Image (cartoon, rainbow, N blue to C red; front, side):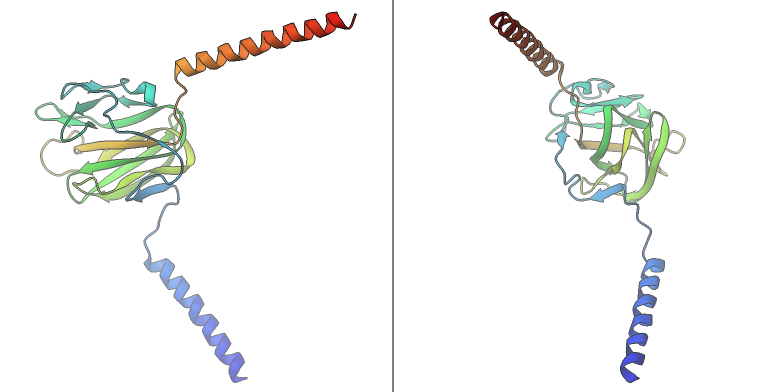
Length: 217
């Protein structure tokens, strides 16, 4: 009886601890990424050193060949020690920032800098339909990656709150770098090469079949 009572007490205690942990722990979203490394699966990374532009250049589709566009636009900055894009330039104000992908993605992550200890919201869309959203406290250093995984989406919209300096509808400045994509578009040159090989194989098979048919007569 004592053993049974002890076992029952332990079971109730463990269940109580589990429920308390769920109540105390902050809710997490399985599809939201916030870590120090980004994507763990195979991916490509856009460092914004692939195409170099003068400081302050408005960026829209200049990185489309690597898989991403910016709307309405981002500003390019080649410093310090490598390129990055942002939604602001001194005296030019701040624009809300969307990342629009050439092909739908299952996983995306990126480094992000904002004013220190502000709330940043992230929205994932597929065909202009919201499929996931999340918020995080972001900081003034490239110490964290943010993004989404486990869902399909073709756009990420980023909105940062900020109480000082420039704002547009409450939007604050952000800097983005090291954009990781799970899916990248096939370059036109590779697609053309593959198509040529496919057609060559087709005609070769046709000639071989014709030869076989002719020999069998």
